[in-house]
Image 1: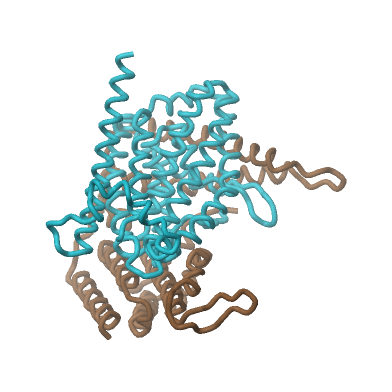
Image 2: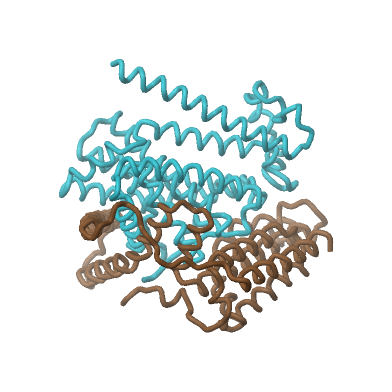
Length: 318
Length: 261
């Protein structure tokens, strides 16, 4: 089988050690939740089903079609898996796929594996799922709208993953955001079209031949919290992008930010919570920054959880 | 056309193949951590790591160039680091004629360091997968604290990659057999081709779901209760501890040379 690397697998050496470790910690937490949620969903079917579907995604990434000038469209699969099986099952499947690609095929680094799992597994799954469900709610649930929504969801999922990758590279000081963001977002806006066409085609076929299969995704765990998990992750990434931690090197994001003069504006809203991003009791600059980032992320997650709870209660009352 | 693991694991009689999988996993991670932590321009330390990797490759019976050859897979990603020589402040080295971009010495050093880091880190991964059979690697992952369930899922996936990979190859072959290029006929557009590829993925998904049901039922009828039992349990021997300690000492030395040397 021709194994073609996808441009989003970050190899080792491109992420700084601290950034890579933060990615691992986040990934471990998310995988833990995914394992628990899919156990409730699938019971003892979990291992054979998730394993074979991970092999399915891995193999389906080889199905391609020519686009233009020697490039070809193919599938990443996170959005498709999430639409059909739910976001947490998709997270577990994509984690397996990306781990095997790193361990056996050296596609994507071992230290960078944490972020690779988040970019290509968690973010694609949750962005795809949330976009698909929201679109269906807004434009109505018909067979045409499902295909259209899955196209949009798949395109967006690739784009979100690419943007996250660009931010991580910028925070590591490997590639300035000014360059990495338009490059990654631009290239993947095109790649996303291939992803969207394949995902839309697959969903179209599934609902024409076996509409009951699509119901699994509609009843999967995580359907209500998907938007909040996604929002939490994105906000955490944004905070990381604008934290002083972002630039141990003079040419990192902060340099660009200072040049463009947007760092002051960007960090303004956070000043009220954590003045100048530092916690006064701790003296060491790096430590206090890390602490402030963790605290900020926790606060955001907490807020998202409370809001989510409130929305749920309102829905139930109705 | 057939797809299997023979091009990844390289069976040899070397002593590295006999080491405990945990030692090999930890060593690979330790080498990668060292390489990634080395500061820009630490050429002697980076050279030492390269020498270490070549030495490991030779002692594993793979020849000096095995890992080096396998390490080029990550090179397309270098594009992401291309702006570094131009944007790092420092003494100007060269101005690109016509564009007016200046390459700085500091920037060039950082750029080359990133390339070398990636190249060496991938070599460590190549050596790991070439000397460790997949079941042993999975056992090692589990013994090192990766959740049992995730390891079981990955193990299952690896077992079926090749079955499903062959299935995809058959589908792709059938597609190309049905779609010849006939002179005078227009080739279908991207939209249509994309949709067709999607429908292939959709029917492939249904086949995979059905296969997973069959596999689960076959397992349940043989007494499967949601847990996979492994029979093999390697234990750390003295030579495993010695190998791990030796490698850690060497890497600590490399780090010291890289940071203070």
